[in-house]
Structure formats: C-alpha cells, structure tokens
Image (cartoon, rainbow, N blue to C red; front, side, top):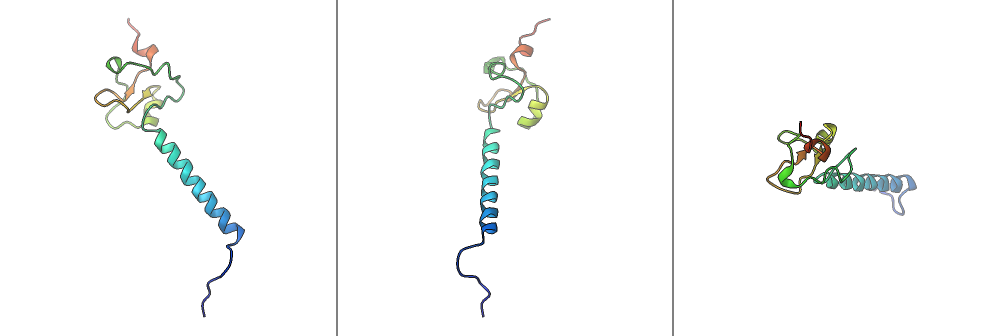
Length: 95
C-alpha cells in the first residue's frame, strides 16, 4: 500500500512554500542591488563623484557593506577606478 496522499495540500504546507519563495525573492532583490550604487547613510549627490576624481576609501575585495560602514560610497559600475570611494565633502577638502 502506498502512504501518499491524494488531493490538495494542507494550508500550512502551502503557506510554508509561499513564505520560502517570498524569502528567496527578497534575498535575490537585496543581492542584486549590492553590485553598484550603494549609498547607505549618504545621499546620491554626495556619491556623484566623477570617476577620475574618486579617492579610494577601501581595500581589495571590500564589500558594499564594509565600504558603507567606513562612511564611503560604493559603486562597482565603472571598471578601472576605485569602487569604494570618499563622498564629495571629503574628497574635495583641501588643507
């Protein structure tokens, strides 16, 4: 004899599956936004530093979160320039 159920799944199994897929979608959405243009605690204007004027604020393989924790901007959309860089008010200071 087979112990398989026939018929619709119980509501708790369906709800668990929905919760799982919702979590997957949220994680993917958050992960995809980390590749470029993260400015946690900074405005986009502060991070609108021309590529040639970027002052490095990170280290090799710094993550967007680590960069932002240093008070810096992260933008990996332009190759060959620092991805973790000082915001405008710091980059433009001259003493």
